[in-house]
Image (cartoon, helix red, strand yellow):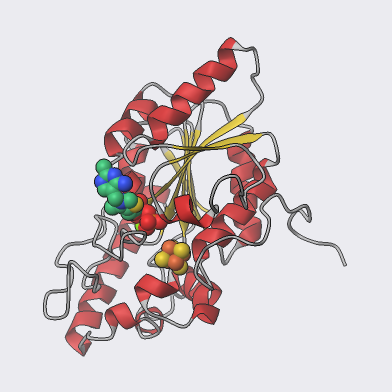
Length: 292
Ligand SMILES: Cc1ncc(C[n+]2csc(CCOP(=O)(O)OP(=O)(O)O)c2C)c(N)n1
Ligand code: SF4
Ligand SMILES: [Mg+2]
């Protein structure tokens, strides 16, 4: 049988994630695409634990633990160090959660993008601060429950549009990716690997612990997010050329995605209708940008 993704594993088993963690598949596929010649800057997030306690590591590439807000600036510094040594071919990756990207690290991220630093910034998006027990981030979707938006007071604001923010920096390459579409994801990382300058990839990474669903549903949920249109798979060149990499002719109703997750269990029909309306509006805006 011919495999459609690289067979070689760089990440090893024995990691410390919860069962069914989407962020694990995100790292596994990323490393399959980028290969061994990769160094990762890792701020505080679930992945600082998943990797394992020193001197053990489930990630067989050098990994530099750093402060929460500094993923991008640490990666930029590592890249500058390699440049001075004349090592031009190392993939320098900043690997951060949504809290570290949409919120606390956005200053460093914007700075690296404005300078067009030659790094690959990856945000694995599990839509809350999961490592510290599921607090709301600006990536948490509308009406989701977290420990800081509890029963009776679900999130009142929309998920921040980080992709448009990054596109406004006019960086060479931006993509969204999903662990349910590994071929698409690996193709995007390979493209990023061969692009020079700042690259930003947002990987949708379901979290059974925080989203309150059964671990075996991780890939199904990631697929439903794409099929319902709440997480479209796109890529953007130079901030201006937007393209859908997975076209969904007839999106599934958003309720199919929402109903599998405990964080949305409190929703009434009027709430799901409101979410559906926002998903439709966002999709129409995206199609306009793409010119379809
Ligand atoms: C300056 C600072 N504030 C708070 C923390 C505590 N902290 C560590 S990880 C984390 C959550 C990270 O959330 P996210 O970036 O979304 O990654 P996830 O844990 O969801 O994988 C927090 C709040 C910290 N380490 N440093
Ligand atoms: S809390 Fe969520 S993101 Fe963190 S290790 Fe567990 S499943 Fe993965
Ligand atoms: Mg998170």
